[in-house]
Amino acid sequence: MSTTMPGQPLNPAVIAARHNEDILVGNELVRHNRVSRVIHWGVAISFFVGLFTGMPIWTPLFGWMAYLFGGLEVCRWLHPWAGVVFAVLSIVMFFYWLTDMRLLPGETREWFGPKAFTYMKYEDEPDAGKYNGGQKLFFYAVSLGMLGLLLTGIVMWFPLSFPRWVRALSIVLHDITFICFMVAVVLHIYLGTTAEPGTFRSMTRGTVTKPWARLHHPGWLRDVAGRRE
Ligand code: HEM
Image (cartoon, rainbow, N blue to C red; front, side, top):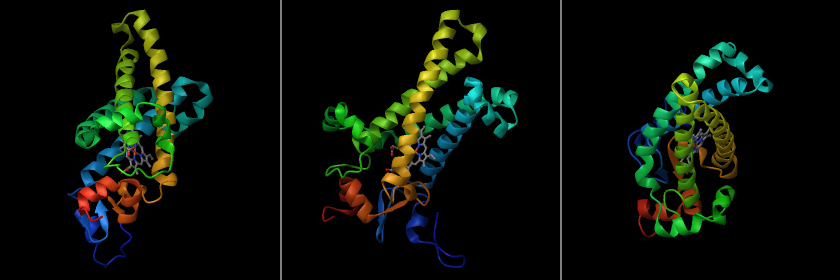
């Protein structure tokens, strides 16, 4: 989102963020181009529609949520379709971001351990590239979670096509996966909006400042702006 007033020329970094990524424009770095941001917001919106239509189906405790969509019957119809949209967009996001999400050998060693729990920590990583190991793990975890929700959701959508034990197992796995997903996404939103100031704008206007990049992703800053940074 630009802070430019009507009639004023648009910030060149915001214009560049329509098509480019990983470039320096003045004092700003383009982090997510427009396609990347549209895909991410599509994933986020379809996730929340799926969540809020699914919770009243799950338990009457959240029955009041159904009124947001016009009642339980609408939720029962809308929920699987929101899930399909979420799955399709997540697959698109997976392949669009995969190149930047490749785990480096050191990261795999470091982050597949107790450090995975520091995803929430507001700390600078001297070697972090465009994404740190925690963000990469989150990326793979939500991709795997999406697959789990999709497969178990299909079983529940077409129950007569599957044996009884598969249906019973799918219900349990669907519930466990969605609860883990919800917790992870709440932490993710906290990190992207509150814990790391300056991050949210990368998903609205597409750009971040140099000090932000120096603090959180110095390796990426060096790649984009040159060694002297
Ligand atoms: C209101 C909801 C959300 C907000 C405010 C939000 C915010 C953000 C922000 C600011 C980034 C950029 C981080 C960076 O460039 O370093 C990001 C990245 C990302 N988002 Fe979201 N997001 C939301 C929902 C979701 C949902 C529902 C999913 C998946 C189901 C998701 C998956 C991702 C992934 C995989 C990344 C890249 C890895 C990472 O930065 O952690 N986001 N999000």
